[in-house]
Length: 565
Image (cartoon, rainbow, N blue to C red):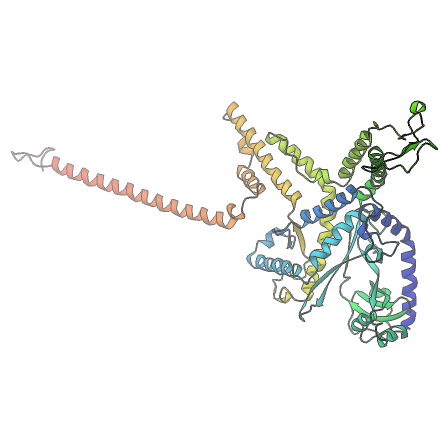
């Protein structure tokens, strides 16, 4: 029965990859023009073969390289916390206990991702260039044992050529993945120690020098309810993970899995097609092909101009035409050049290749525009706050098509990574977390140039608003406009927009404490003022009584001032 499962999986694998073969041909063409390092979709590349041997202009390669590198710097800028995990509820996230847990999750997650043996940096670097060229990047995130014997996070990017998948019923995420790969006989023995190996593999292991011989294997992830295990597992899980030997159609391992493990990042999508595409490379393919022809013709024209082909008169030239420096070409001494030169350039030397250079410059500009390189920098020619705000909004509109799908793909990868870390209890036992966040999924927010531009644009908007208020106050000091505007919020958003340190902005608790302190100090001042007034009254009363006593002193004759005493 195990072999029957392998046979069925092999048949399904073949159908998926046969259907994908035309897409592989397109990707091969894209790779030849923009990413020659990956031009092995339909051909086997031998070690030491020269990349881009048929190309005459490197501009298409530079455009792909620059956009791929820019994707990394935009989504994962170094030296800053470019992504933060949250629970999607800002009020709960501010609770001290939950805030401490989220802070720990982010610190541990970042530390695990950027470990040297986690492979995250290299995985994302490969994925950056795959997605800008082919529109698809396939990655895995799983736990594994490193060389020191510790369990940690392992991430890896896979070649689009080797992967074929099907989407689930929603059409959003894949739920069936076939991944072809090669493994040596000695690696197969280490990876699948309990598997029954085919005789060819065991012979390679037994024969000296053949242990490194490679065999074709395949890994499949699929819903568990669509797979019938050869040996029913003890634990239930939503996914089934199967490895099998493609050539011999034999199962190597079948296990339940709590996670799908594969993350498929796609840039552009079309309805009904599970594979993505790159808007940059697809629009650039005609120009990428054309610029190579132009460059070839221009190089040939330059060569003809500098070292033109020669025309010689038959039976007049007595030797080879030696056009090198210091060369001598012998001509018959009896030849009369009145009938024409004995030797002359085939083409006139005054030909101007300028039109070819103009065409190449035009295509170069088009390529840079097609690869979004002209839209990645913030315009600088603005003078007023209003002009700056308009240019920043234009920058945001131009870059949203880049950032939206890229952020979504990055969030899926982070979700998988943090899910694996949760399974490893890397953040501590979940049963000790507050009930408000137990069982809740993580949501990720990003800090990148687009978000920075959106926040920075609030500064320009704040300047415009404050300018309007100042102008209105000059015209009519009694204008009610300022009453309707939350000045404090305008200033706070503007302060955040210019990237001020978080410590500059007081939180609600600090503001409340300062208000309570001011209230207490005000009460004390009022009390002191009240006590002072009472003292003044008392002192005034005492002074008045003394004066009254002085006035009530008896006269010298013994009579009273106000009548009889």
